Picture 1 (cartoon, rainbow, N blue to C red):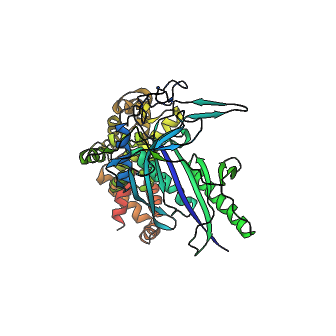
Picture 2 (tube, helix red, strand yellow):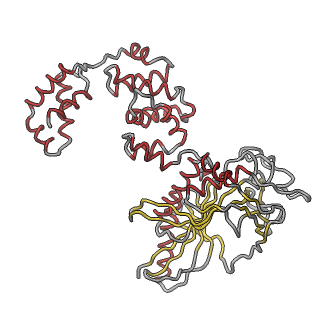
Length: 473
């Protein structure tokens, strides 16, 4: 019997604000434990919450990017439970009326284009950080009250690949909108998976299993694929799937039982009495949306239209600071494709060698763009320009000084001279010419090599390639 997986995701995103969701305590992570707290965070009697305006704007930005309906009135609720991670014994959230609802994401998957529906996006406060030791637990309330948005999909995902792509797309949205740093390894973006299996053709869902706190895209895909196999093997043996919460053990590559769920928890939600409904003006919502920077997908489309390959564009977009550096280097004289090539290969290599980030690079973006443009302008090859770039990075000198210091001589770009050489190469290699005309692109590389050999490496290979292609039309 073949089974279909039914998968829904809950994603929690910590959003960037100066202060917490409902208090004036700073929203920071790298402070001494229990120093970024106020009386409200510790549930002192008589303290009252106030809603963080910037957190609301962040929620609007993400809701808009996810094609959601945005509620113009904020309602908050209390989620009641007794646990040590929030001192007041309840969490302020949006159970009844989420700020965003009925959205979607389009994913390009191995099964084709898939539109995944998103049920809701709501605001709430984070809980404290817990460090469980052998016989006691340490609590750090710095994180308690940090603004969160929770994004809940409909159960429309079917594979680990789709789940990975879905989380990746949401991470790109929250990072490029400036809402969050999206660092899963640090917990600022956390993912829970709900998964069940059913025979193909059956409409009813199977018994749902929850996988908690997956902290990387790779783990999300692997955990789901493992869980699909685990549940399928049990069903084929005629055994029932237990409703339970599991975690993913990366070292073993399998999900592990955390606890069995017998009944649904009754959190006894009721309206937060200390925060009356807040009406959002159309201007407030419109301004929040207009303030959203260019998002990942828009940048990707724009880069590809510049002539950059999609693979290279995605490498640049892995880091918003890297993308910002790239755009700062796009001076008029330098082609986007050349800037991208030098950035991905030479700059990345330099950063890795020196163990630096792009923000620590000792070269301003515009200066980098001028060095990239310097090579073709002075008849230099890519390799020669790369050597000049490295010298500029290491010594802080100009490209002119670097060229003189390295004694780099420009190769001939005299079109008349090179054209005569190309004609000679074409006459001497008719078989390669025919092969190129029959679609064998490798023949072009061979012919360029013959020209460089005959000229003792003294002609510009880019010009040779251009004239060879023209001569073989």
